[in-house]
Structure formats: C-alpha cells, structure tokens
Length: 380
Ligand SMILES: Nc1ncnc2c1ncn2[C@@H]1O[C@H](COP(=O)(O)OP(=O)(O)O)[C@@H](O)[C@H]1O
Ligand SMILES: [Mg+2]
Image (cartoon, rainbow, N blue to C red; front, side, top):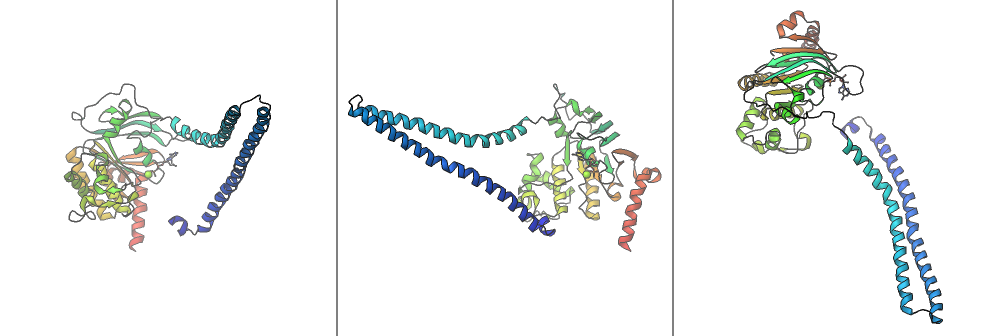
C-alpha cells in the first residue's frame, strides 16, 4: 500500500481492481441468471408431472382399476425421482469449481523437492569433531539458466575463523552461502562441514549444523523470547541475553522494561531495519551450530554498531570454536576477517587476508577505491 501511495499509483490500482471486479461480476451474473431459471423450471416440471399423474390416476380410479393409495404412492415416487434430477443439476454447477481447485492443489502436492536425503545418511557425532567448512571446486547453476551462478568455488575455514565474502550486487554472494545449508545442490564439487560431505548427511543434520541469517530479516509475530527460541526451543533466558548482547540488541530491548516479553509485530514491523537485523543476528546465535552464516546482515547498521558487533562475534566464535561466514559490501566489515573471498560474477577472484588482497588483488583494490572516494565526497 505504501509503495502504491508513494508512487501515486492509486488510480492505476483502483482501475486494475475495478477491472477484475467487473469481470467477476459479469461472469457471476451470467452464471446465476442461468441457475436462477432452474428452480422455477423444476417446480413447473414437478407440478406438471403431478397434474398429469392426478389427471390420469383420477380416470383409473373412477374406472375402479386402481386404489387411491396407489396413486398417492406413485406421486411420492415421482417427486423423489425429480428431486434427484434437481440434485444432479446442482452437482453440474459445483463440479467445474471443485475440479479447478483440485487441479491447483494437486500441482502443489505433486511438486518434487530437487534436494533429496541420501538413502543411508551417515550419522556424525558432533562432540568429537572440530568445526570446519570447505568448498571443493563447487559449480552451481540455477535451474534453466545458461551461465554458472557459482564457478569453481574453493576455500577452507577452520574452527574459530571468520570468512568474509565481499563483492558487488548480483556477484553471487547469497547464492554461495545458500549452498551451505544445502538449499540447492551444486552441479559439481563438494561442500564439507566438519569434514563430511553434506550430501551424505540427512538434511535435518545439515540444517542443525548451519545457523543462517538470511539477507532479508524475517521476524514472526510474538514475543522477543519466542522469536529467539525459534531455532533452539530450549534456550534459557541467560543464553538469549548473551546472544542479544553480542548482537548489540540490548540497546533497544531493555532488561528492566518488558525484556524478552517485548512484543514483535508481524514481520517485525515495530522495529527499524537495523533493529530487525540485530534481532535476526541474535536469533542465529541462539541456535548453537558449528557454522554461522550472516548474509548481508550488517548492511543496515551504523559503522560503530557494526564494529562492536563483529568484535564480540569474533570473541564468541573463538570461544565456541565455530566457523563464521559473513557476507558484506563494506570493506570495513570484512577487513579483520581471517579469510576474505572476493567474488565477482560467480567466481572467487581472490582470497586471503586484508593486507594480502590489498597488495595484489585488483578487484579488491577497486572496491576499496570506490568506497574511499565515496567517503571523501561525503566528508568534503
Ligand atoms: N532464484 C534464482 N534464479 C535464477 N537466478 C538467480 C536466482 N537468484 C539469484 N539469481 C542470479 O544469480 C546471481 C547472483 O545473485 P545473488 O547471489 O543474489 O547475488 P548477491 O547476493 O551477491 O547480490 C544474479 O545474477 C541473480 O540474477
Ligand atoms: Mg545477496
């Protein structure tokens, strides 16, 4: 509604709605006109039949070839048969409607998931393994597309490390991270979490190993606590507050007011973009996992909050010995990561730390250059 108002499209939308409404009205009037004839016609036929029966029956009775009781019985049978015909005609009205709905429902039910569990998934016990994430020559293509969306991705991160992915919009950052929880299967290559190919695990296991904050912050109607417990229903209040502190969410969710009972509207509409991002980050942290992924989750934060958040996130991941994957657009967000992947057009065109990339990666240098220039203009 706001988009429509802001772009002054009220008239256009009203007309569009009017058009659809008119079309429906037209069809409905046509259909119900036909249907409305049915009742009088049926009554006419029924009464006519009765008249015929009585007229003919009366003659037979007066000739004394039939009993009055038989005539009454005959009339009852005739009425029953005619009623059935009337029902039948009603069914003909309902069948097309039902079949159109059934067709659509079946389309949804028959949709096959392209990602399947292996027949004998291997079970991996978590406690004995140290966290790691590895991509081995991963190629990925969206269904029906000619070009590869991810082309030969190769990297490895181990416990306590932070991997940052930087690149322009549409370069394939979100696509790359969506392969980690196996939302899609790569065309070629392997993705290993804690040394195990994710294709050999059950999807449930994979999802338990990856905690993901998606690019678009999605919150649900309910209390803050309910939202935080979404990935970990057993989380205690202390654990939740700890995650909220790392995510810098205690700035606006205060212990001394409603605290975790604070209300979240549908879509989190009663929070700003940056606040929503911080809450989704906290929710991601409450679900304990060896691999955390934050897809552009810092974009709506101011520089100070961004820096503080990454600092405490880093400390926490080193204590927990987990792997953290951060997707970002700003150099400042990625600069202190252990491994930075520069991605351009689906290819990883450089990897290393900030100093290495700054010294010898052209794309990385271009990103720095463009952001420094922008900063200068803003200052001057
Ligand atoms: N569901 C999809 N189907 C087909 N192409 C897609 C889909 N999602 C993204 N793409 C394409 O893949 C490329 C990378 O997109 P994305 O990973 O979202 O980029 P980023 O997150 O770096 O901005 C883009 O060119 C985009 O058009
Ligand atoms: Mg993205």
